[in-house]
Length: 239
Image (cartoon, rainbow, N blue to C red; front, side, top):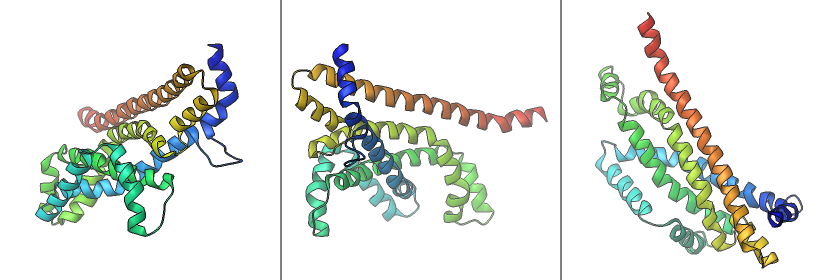
């Protein structure tokens, strides 16, 4: 136990913020930045792919389905390797490991979030779309104004669960020396040499605390959404 306390005292800043502010940010802070960036950038793409999966346009359905199936069939590590070697060939110049990981995370997360969006849309009563179309709204207007606002609201807990998965998935970035939390722990272990068990216990504990806290947040959001759904029903019954 004393060894763990000593490691946290001596290397706590390296594990949490890396070399910041004297150097680049890293550790836990970079892990959360990577996960949040991956989620934010993949979200609009996932909405497009998710809607494309149920589009009346057969070409959009086939392309969206092919993307989802291919990406979901590949491990994240493979996508990172592809981005690491292929992106420089496409743009004609080298890219940083950080950019490589963000590209891989966005592609990976888009495929999974697209299925969340698709499931949320299909979970809505079909009568809503039929009623809006009968009122003269186009397919695009129905999706934009009626279906997507409800579906995305209902999908918030699932989206937050995907964020939790992203936090854990960023650990793969250490393979190309991106200074996120796992790589920071690897650096600490390389300096100490004789205390790998203590270092990786700290690493596991940090991941557990972060993911457990986020999971509690998801439960709270689910409860709020359930309450908001029941409020109109209760008000109607009272009337």
